[in-house]
Image 1 (tube, rainbow, N blue to C red):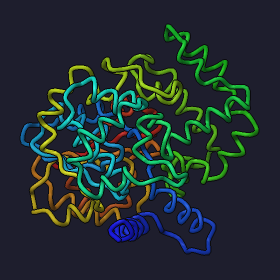
Image 2 (cartoon, rainbow, N blue to C red):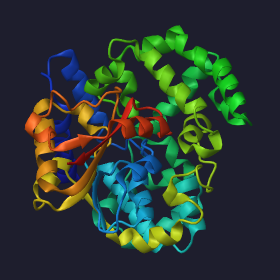
Image 3 (cartoon, rainbow, N blue to C red):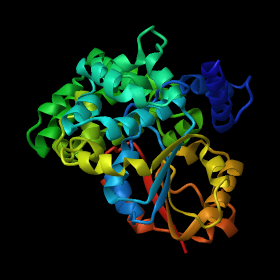
Length: 409
């Protein structure tokens, strides 16, 4: 019964966030299909760069960060800067269960080797024994039921950590499909990982990956908004990402940045996208929370994290005025109507301490707030335009058009 109640609750809050068009319209049908897919695991790994986040947020010892949880990599990575508290909220029940699994594992596993094997390697049969003996007994009931239960194909969800967790979920399956389409089209994405120099990266991309985006098959697939549901991109965000261009051309630019603008050994996003695994645990090859020297501070500070299955703005509405100072919205605003944006920024402004910072991503390059958020609200915030351009350039995930920072005037 609790499982059914949880599913109904998730369906309601997801629909409130995603559904913007009539059921009978083409976009309305796509939105409802996306909402259905989004009820399962979407992101085994969050696709925003936590190193850029921490530089932009300038986390202080008294900071209370409120962030969308997603796959949880960034939540635990923020602990490196030792904030007072992190509140991670998410609409997705699977993401909540994954964040709680990481939280409990950080506090109860005995070594970095165990922790890295579970969440870095994430494809070792010993992980199941660790789950049964070290994690499951102290995991909350709802999360325990999620991992003990079976997915749509009848497989126990926790067994994903024995067979390759980063190949699961919408994102993992999407990357696998892209590799398959690439091979069918004559592209060889994995070859990129053989590059020894930056020049070789560019040569291999131009020879073995770039031509795929001009192929008839990929261009046909990219013309349908449903093709990017595997990236967690709903119809509203698809329109923002494409603009007046063909989606295949946009994805070519973003993929080329991912493949060519950063050294592969320092970009774990590229390692997962092209090689399907981390090359860690050295810095750059994994999210900060999985680095070799990280386990001590993750274990020590994980107690300051709280994880809530809740809408972001509803959480803000429950907080006192002037009580929060760091907000991480990921790309959620790309999904929102003007009404939802104004409610969100009304609560952010009400709850913000002096000097508060808000960080978010957008599919398109410009910030989406001017002209959509009430001028009296937005005038209270300073847009760090030059800093935002620099953060966009540095973001190793490469999929977003813009990384944007605002702070309270």
